[in-house]
Length: 119
Image (cartoon, rainbow, N blue to C red; front, side, top):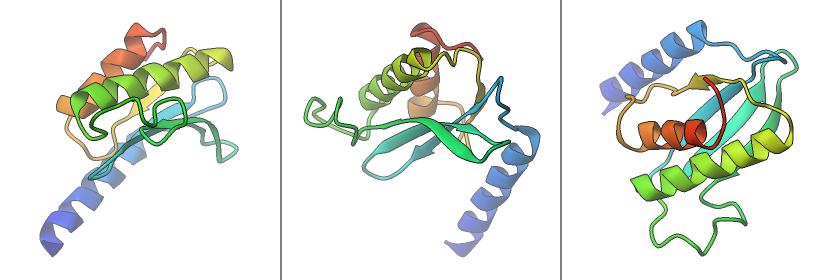
């Protein structure tokens, strides 16, 4: 178990070294927990979170039957895109953390793209 955690941490650091969010193009970071999916748009130059959404958000809470599947990821992607466009954030950089670009992560990214975000 410890080796798999070390490998994941290494992947997270490798991805993060290549991706930086700026004021003009902030970073969309995704975290996939065991029960919930979280996404936030971060300006790394100031170190602040501009927009956040998750399956625990008031807009989604109680509307999803399951909070850890592909459908929930699509809902979070749509919600984060809607909130970002309200704050005039259209161009972003996608940070998948160490996760493979399949399943829930891909569903969230595709839903955000379909809702108007460009990355």
